[in-house]
Length: 474
Image (cartoon, rainbow, N blue to C red; front, top):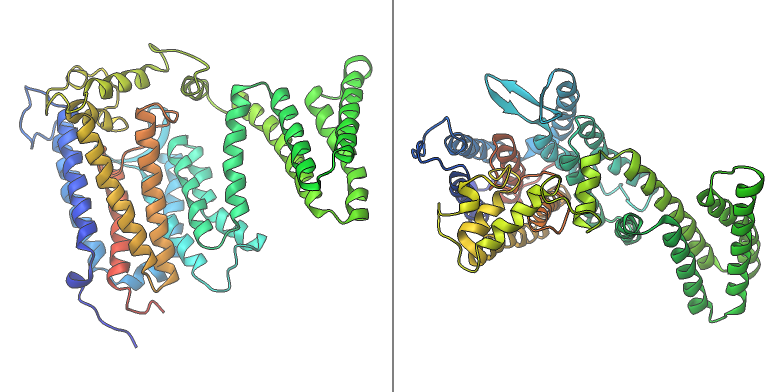
């Protein structure tokens, strides 16, 4: 039997308070970031802080509507909501307005609407709906691939816009899958892929491949506690690679040293299969497949980096890794961001007193680089305070997610946490030079109606589900 609850009494007011505080701090910093002495009025709609006020009041109305809607609507209509947003992502590629090289916006009477911001909420709903069933087991490849396809579908459409920054955010759903039962080895493999990606960019492919072969050799020696058999296998692989390289150089072109290494590993794998079967050493096969897959991956990364990424994206990654230095070109945003935050010192320059902010040295300061305003005008103390407020929000979201009786609400709650945390980490990380500049907003602080509304819906749907956690969805 359905239990009725009083929403006003059961809603988590602490999380709502944190939300309101972040939205208020966001507006204050947007006002400071675009402040014009000739337009001091806070309700001047020709300025971004005036427009943001409209977005804020609209977001509060949206939050109220979300809380008043029956919580079962989000469960039963999750597939329809997801399908509608995917349709919008298709339509925006056809009739959308192009801004800054990305066809990602619908325009209605001068007001832009970015459907990709709402795709996060819709995808979180449908992933939770799919995974809530006890019949779904993420250790089965079919179930796992279906779950991945649910969030990769909007990713592919968003990449076509192209909007790489927003697309990258959907990687956060892998953490949701891990919490829902995905093998930790898959998550571990993902972290290794990131490490290999960085190594491939920093060093020559051949050196990375040789390093992987040596690492595999050391692991086999430590695991088997024998030296001669692994050394023999390493010598065989080296001889095959040398033979392939000589064949490529003096007889026929087989595709270079990269192809020679992969072919050599495949040939060596035939003999390895007999060895594994003979002595029942399955763990050796695991190491071999890891080695082969890793080497194929690094060559794929090299090709993708040089042929699929745009030149400015390559440059941004190279600047972060210290390979290139372009303070007046592609690295200008990051350089000015670091100057702005560093100039704030311990206690900041004071509200509306930031010189970097006042003279517009940092591009996109009210959107992607809003944290620069915090760092310059509020200093280290203010920056730590803002980060602390976010950490309180994240901690509270985890607490709320864990207390859900419904698998649907719990999984959705972890989706909310993962998306918001990913935005937080990437946005602040790119302003202080920890990650490449990919252009994603800081939740609730950055200027923009679509992002604020999207984050508001994302959060308040979860608060609505939590408020009715004693009710039955089915």
